Length: 177
Image 1 (cartoon, one colour):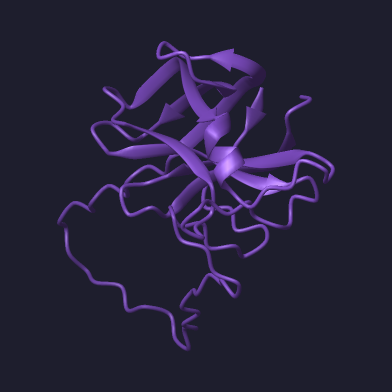
Image 2: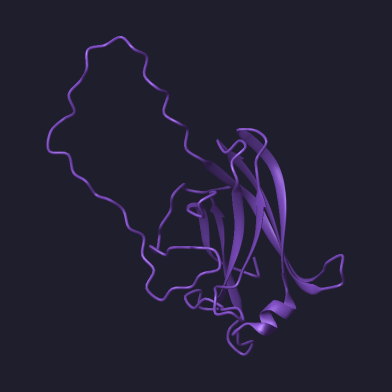
């Protein structure tokens, strides 16, 4: 099993659906405390801190010769995962496509990052044994700026919340897993 680390920003890449940006950064407020907070003397119960999302990747596979129900050929990504603490919250599982160097994003015909995604809402806080199928038709690659003479394609597997903020990411994956 491969565990996802919640809120990873390994390359400070702001991964937003359908938008490309040459200078994307993640901004975080870094307020520093100068004093310790004053402790109140009361007997009220403390609010329980919400549990953070945990994503466990059990495995993935890629079929580069997949044909969907409509007869379209393309690349199918099968992702086997468990997700905790996301009950009834909209969640996206996304595949962002890059050139073989995994630095240069493949852009679609509109100039946006080529991405395929699946939206779902876990029905429990311990949503186990899920297999997602994400499909990237070849006609999307043909319409993109991808150059097949380069050294292939790579992809990032990203889980995002309802605000399209990253909650888990696995980078630099290739078709030949």
